[in-house]
Image (cartoon, rainbow, N blue to C red; front, side, top):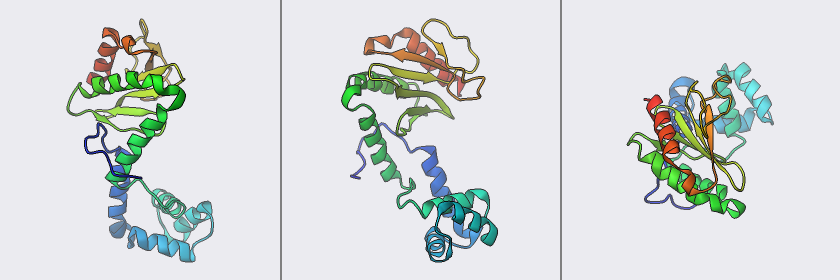
Length: 206
């Protein structure tokens, strides 16, 4: 990966901060640093990730989270623990999302990204590989190029009734954050209704 962009619209994903905090806490909680654990597991532990997880719990009395993360770390060289690494990856994921047949959806994404960030200085945009969530305290919206001709704006609107172009995803009953979506095929589809619903989702997460 290259260098992170100097002026990026993206923020560090909460999972990156969680992994970094976990790594920092390991010596106090377990008596070993991450590197020491990896060296120990590779030298004395079983061969597979599943066996290592069970071994860490039974032989070292580690909790499920510690055991799972350490066993996984021994299989994966790169972990999302570094801000710069994540920001580079985030930009690359977005580029890949809107490559080839989905290129025409990129202007819709860019317009929604600008609109979402304009809602408040507390908005964080934290791309994943297939979606781009927008956070306030929690995820209040997400951008997803669902097909080659449609970008879905997902919204966390609780149990508000779906009206007009707003589609109920069934997320509220399934206890998902995203409960509604609006399908967008062109930039002009981002009308006053879309702006109002996005602002509503932002306000509900205050």
